[in-house]
Image (cartoon, rainbow over all chains, first blue to last red):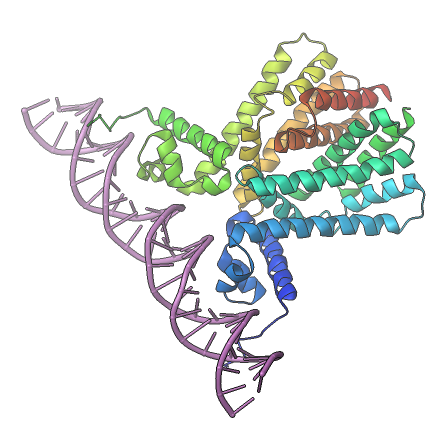
Length: 199
Length: 199
DNA sequence: CTCCTTGTTGGACGATCGTACAACAACTGC
DNA sequence: GCAGTTGTTGTACGATCGTCCAACAAGGAG
C-alpha cells in the first residue's frame, strides 16, 4: 500500500476531471447523489479539493451543465458533419442522432433532469438554461432557413421541432420500452417533412 | 399562546393533507427541499407523523406522484368535458388546456421533474411513471380513433402528440419568456391538423 | 540546498437529513 | 368515571451534508 496518494495536476485538467466526474455521478445517481464527497471519490481526489477549484458545489454543477451542453452540441455537429452540404440531409442527420447514443442515453437524461431541477431554485442555472436553449434554437433556425422556411415561420418552426424532439427524447430515455429509437426517428422525420412541404 | 397544538384528524384526510403538502413543497423547492421536516411544517403537523402514515419519505413521494397525476388527468378531463361530444373539439380542448394554468405552471413542472429525477433510482417510481404515461396515451388513442385515425397509425400518432405537447409544456414552464402559451397552442393545433388531414 | 509558492490532503465543524421511540392527548367501549 | 386504543407530539440518534482550514507534498526561484 501507501501509494503516492498525492499527485499534482495541471489546473485546467483538474478542473475538467472534476467536471466530468460530476457528470458521471449525476448520470448514475441523479441530483440526490451528487454530493461533494461522491464527486471527489469519482474523480479520485480529496473532498476538500472541490472548494479549491469551485465556489461551492453549485458552481461545479453549473460548470458541468455548460460542459455537458457543449458535448451534446458537439455530438450533433459531428452527426451533421458526416453528411454533405444538403441542408435537408443535415436536418435528418440531426434528428437521427437525437435518438441514438450518446444523445439518447438514460444517464444523459438523468444529468439533464438534474439541471432542470435546479432551474427554479438557482437563477444562475436558469440563465444558463436560457442561453443553451436559445443557442440551440438559433442554430436550428439557420438550418431551417437553408431548407427554405420563410422568415415569418422560422421561429415557431424551430420551437416546434425542438419541442417534438425533446419530448420524444425524454420519454425514450425515461422508459425505453414504450417505443423504439427507429419509431421516434420516423415520427420526427414525418413531422419535419410535413412542416417543410406545407409551404 | 398555548394553542391546542394537537388535533386529531380522519386518517384519510390526514394522509391527503400530507400528500398535498408534499406537492406544494415539491412545487416550491424542488426535490432538494422536500425533506420530512419541511413537509411536516407545510402540513402543520409534527415530523414524526410522516412515519406513522407512510413507510418512509419515498413512499410519500410516490403517493404524491399518483395524486398529482390524477389531478392533471382531472383537469384535462374537465377541459374536454366543457366541449360537446365532437372528438376534434375535445382534442383541441385538451391541447389548449395543456398550456394554461393549472397545467402550465412552473410549480407543477418542478413537481414533475422531481418525479422524473427519481425514476432512475427508485424502481417503484419508474413503474408508476410507466403506468401513468401508458394510461395517458391509451386515453389519447381512443380519442384519436374517434377522430378517424386508422388502427395502424394509432399508436405512433398518440406518441407523437404526447411528445410534442410534453416538449412544449416543458419549455414553456422552464423559461416562459421563450414563447407564449398561445404560440404553443398554435403549434400543437397545426401539428394535429396535419396529422389528421394527412389520411 | 533552502525558501516559497501552491496544489492537495484529511479531518473538524455545525447544520440537516431520515428514522425510531417514549410520552402524551383524545376518543371508544364499558 | 375508567381502562384501552390510537393519533400525535417532540426529541434523540446516527449518518451525511457543504464548508472550512491547518498541515503536508511537490516543484520552481534564488
